Image (cartoon, rainbow over all chains, first blue to last red; front, side, top):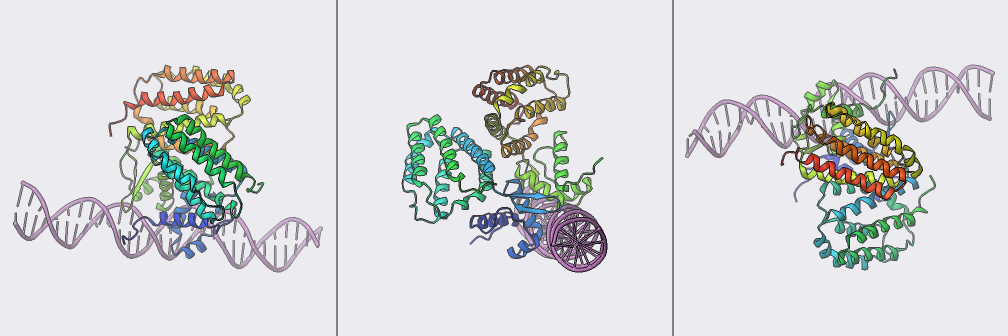
Length: 214
Length: 214
DNA sequence: CATCCGAAATCTGTATACAGAATTCATAGT
DNA sequence: ACTATGAATTCTGTATACAGATTTCGGATG
């Protein structure tokens, strides 16, 4: 096995994000650098570098002299993030090769159809959803845009575990994905983009009630 | 005067960006951390923190063991960035209060009309252009989006000084700004957004020839 | 009992130190 | 003359140390 030769700060960042997905950190709690560094088995230096990166992505916020803390969640911010990602993913479609999009249409349809059952683990549902969106964007030739989308989505991870253990209307989500896939196969990019934006906005509405008032 | 109580890394980031605007750094050159830290009169720690932030914004890139360097410019990346900002600013209009937009319309028109003469300093032209866009977005209620736009625009600063000392068609730029302002005053947000996107795309085309092939 | 004040403790922000990776440069060999 | 090799140098990545800011907590004061 090739040993990991990436900078520590990146490995730390990913570890923190995966812990965030597992719900290890409550939103709004501040971070104790020495404790967390000891827990991770690294020194404060690369940890702080990772924290600064995460702060740039909106996952954390920092206050002078008070260090970092996980940014509190709010309906307003979640709405803002959804609007942004909706626009960016739609733009990514515009930047994709139309013929490629038509090619992956069937695959996207398949993925949308065998959406995990409502019984499945929350983690599993999210993984499947991500896979669908990743495939959708895989033909985007705007690399900078793909990086940006990844970065903005990192900022949304704080909201992911909020709807755990809830019978979310998965059928709606699946149906909307199907619609996007079908529109792509017909080659109507404009309408596909619109359907994709709708999917994000609808998904936002569905989650809204799960987010504490402020 | 209130002394600056922001973290050093932020002050350093801004100093580096302003040096970049002045054309102090050639694209593609690597950064010597000890030399730069000494020059700035700070230690390597906050300098590296600033460098990591700038790398996250796309201004720098980092390679394991090789440190940071100013990301090389390319037509492809510039096109990508323009497409992104065009979409984001257009979205920002959608997120703004329509009545507020109608109110600032005249002011936007004024600013667009007394665009600096072609004799003016390059810096002055850019400052004026930025002022116009800032005012345009000042009514956007999506704070996350405003931060994101600022961040993406930071990544574009590497391209700003490339068109120095050139008779850019400023009239076109001014005319397009006027058109956006007029559409806002009529209250036609959809068309205003489209005109704004066109402005970015046209501006991109104008600059394209000034960017070295690769 | 609430509140204000200050010392102690805690934690961050910055500086410095150290180890190892990457580069440079000189030398030996073909 | 050109390439390969390896020691010396330079620089980054990470760890540790230090100073000052912030929070905590206990006692004095109304």
